[in-house]
Length: 440
Image (cartoon, rainbow, N blue to C red; front, top):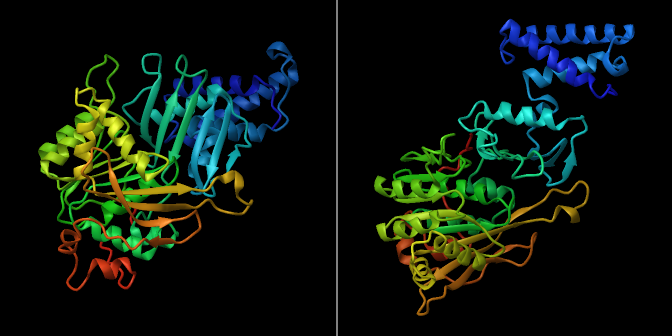
């Protein structure tokens, strides 16, 4: 639609004034709002043909398209409405008046429909209106769960960003279980059974990888594989995990109010959860001082799961130590490293394809590249042993022949007759409790 530059803005403004005067709710009074849009478009057209528009405005070439655009902008989310409703869209990026999105194949595409920065800002404000979070001069950065919890929004405005900058990550995967990840080729059968066996006892694992590699999906699958009688407490900055929990709950951090009060940080949550007798503490993504509280979890005798951004399993161990040191508790790196070295059991590292190297119809793979055991060490540094390795994306994930430490403790939690050797050799497959489809 080739509309005059100011036509959309003036028509939308006129409709918004009429909606406010009539005290209509755009979400529930869609028909009445659309009638006002039609009336405003017709009024604009008459004025254009009569030559009474300011600055010599021209008539619309497609009035019906303008009716749809303005109605969507007021009653829904404008041109982004279609993206929000599509199940094949994983992430949406807004930079000023530009909208890009990633499809399930991992390819970056542009939104064909035109948008303005003001229009995109209105969409962000509409999304946030259903939350207790705000984006304004006092809070130029915001993260929130939106679309009834179906997506995570991260947004920034000036002066922090040059212009409106937002990312909307949609939760498109509904069956976050080990069997489903096995079907998707993320894991081998032996590795999936091994991770299930590990989750039957109170072990501590890190899930690492670059952004978009599938860390949160694997973390949800590990939670789903845990025994129903284990008390699981999950803390996140913004809720993303989805696995159903029989015993335990999910907790979400809270930003400060407009007056600066009431903040509950991720570190506060982890500290609080230690008093709730957990068998397993889960931290969705460790980035800062909350890592130090995990050392307290170790001393409390409970296991933990977390994700860390890293380029390898070994790098993930260093990243966790560095994050703990950021807490500023005057505890030296050697001590923190020694604590994690004694308590961490495994690191599972994932990777994904570079979408720029894929064929047009090829989907990006997200696969486990390595399952690393952290073994007791005589030095302050981490000592590790690879249990499963994959040479490259698309290559098989194979058992190295090594056994994890404390095999007997893991085997005690397995069904009668199941042994770690049989699992690692792929001779038996775990029963996978929680393998039913997981909905959000």
